[in-house]
Length: 295
Image (cartoon, rainbow, N blue to C red):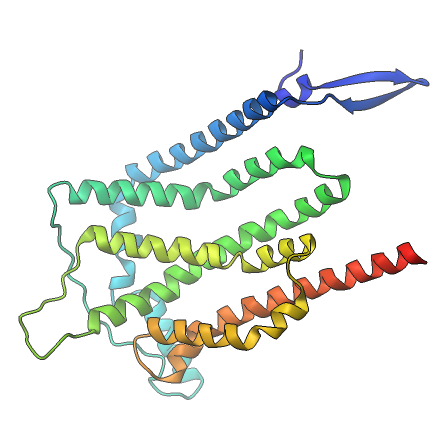
């Protein structure tokens, strides 16, 4: 008896003494059933991660969520040492500003814990969820596309977690440091005390946003394979992209000096150029394949 849906949709015919595998055509509802089981497994893994994070929520909140607000956070000391090593003095050192969080809702602490568990579970379960997505689309691909897709899975994971780490260790300290130090007027009546929910939402948005943004090279490669973009197109619009990158870096850095903007802007520029290189490699390979067809 077949053990899964794909085996149930496969049969063998003996032709010339050899077994040849021929996939039976699946109906629309067969695809829906297949997708349903992929979603069930993905949700099950995600919920497992959510429960585990919620069980250890106190430790995670104290050592991970609140860490960017502490003067002992890794990024502050590392950047300051880097500035001294480059003989730039205290250019990379950020003034530490203590953020006093508050709860403004009756269920504020509970909803914050739920949000942390849900977003943290999504980040932790991302490799498995993407793998299930790959298993669902894999049967519709050609052998060449399957071979290529399997190689790219690792880079999708790597880009996502690299972006998440970048958002947590670099953008989060810069952002909170800048916003906590930004003053409005000369009056001392205004006190900076953001709510716990607002802080958690900002931190998780930075982590997820950077994780998705770092998928730019993978997205550019896929779009180049489809033929929507080319390496020449990305090069042509680089000057516009560079201006946008500089504006974004200037907004999120805590001070207007060029060193702080450089730290934030350089990874985004590198991602764009990696996208250009990947798209250009696809263009070259396509041109070679066309030459072989005409020869």
